[in-house]
Image (cartoon, rainbow, N blue to C red; front, side, top):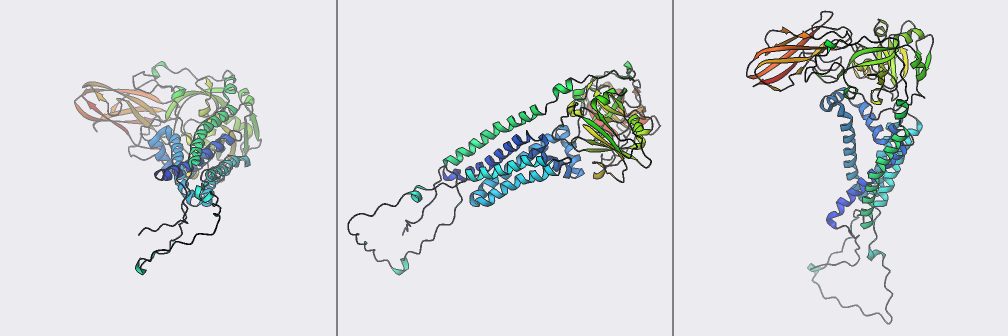
Length: 556
């Protein structure tokens, strides 16, 4: 028979029983969105890099194994940071969606976990290089917001039955209890158990509140980011920089140095196409009027320069091809431009380097450290504290207002962007960022050659086919380039005019009588010292990729 207990009161599911799990998940996501928006808003008044997601993301980059970093660059290229941030937002959303149902059953535990996620941001922000105590505020505010919003949205609704006042007793003598029918012992009703605690289900107000929190967060976060950009905008300050005329002009590039073959990388790379590989999730924005460079350490005369001091020094131009050690064989992270800056070796001589020093450690505004071997800076090459590229002040993404440029070395040992500090020291005393992660401390660029034309898997007509590309052996120069087809004999390519040892060199070769089918093209280079590019394929870690570049084409 049916047993009905009149003492059991249930919470109403105003959004429908089927929608209750989704409503709880929405509450968790709403709490996360609100926390993110508040963290961004507070960071707008503190420092952009103190925003919770950026602090956690930067810490993740630093803690990631070298193999993971190389995989990210290889797989996503210059979009690796966008992918990382998208991953952080995705994980945050999934955790928030799981947190809602948990908090519905154990509200206090859910609120503590919500706050704990924010406190991770506090720890990340305070352990960043150059951290300030105020950097904890955005993540702390986010933690409190997450807990408060979650508690508010999951506040259980009271059922009408539980909140109704009991009816007053009727006047007159109480009615005698109705006699219950006799029930056989075997059919005696069992004692009705008390209902087990159920998960709080957000009522209509909770669901509407979750939606409102998500909508408000969607508006507040971009507004906070815009406010942060406005507060840290240096566009006008950069535009106001008047570059002095160089004391030492670079010689004009020979017209015959640029072959102008369609599909071949240009001799000089437009600034908009210049590659960018670094660990900065947010670009440091430095007002040149407040910028200073400190030169200290193992020197007799420590120095501090303002930007005006730097521009007052004799400036010189340098045509230089810069490359990234993360390049696979034939990779895209290489570019050439004309730099303008002050002589770094001259500044070191003025500071008076002491005996025993073997490293100049550059420190970026965002805490990145790049170590350059001292002997490279004292062998006569033109190393610069660069303030301009391609006749314009450095773009922010390329290190404005000042960066280092040292020919012959990969960027990880020579190219400190957003430079604020130079310490003359030793490798025994200081491990730069990448050296501490196992990379070679010298960073000398390897001899390499790359096929640009025809493109990989191109389909070309039979007959004579133009093969063209670039080769580089920075600060040594390229003496020869060879090409072969299908493992046959090597044939010497025609080199473009030489623009100097610090600039890559274009080349071309005519493949006569190309026949129908699939063919493999290979190239190798020889530097000016007579050293042939190595054949063995090795990955970029720990000192740059090696091997001959090849491409496969189909002749029609």
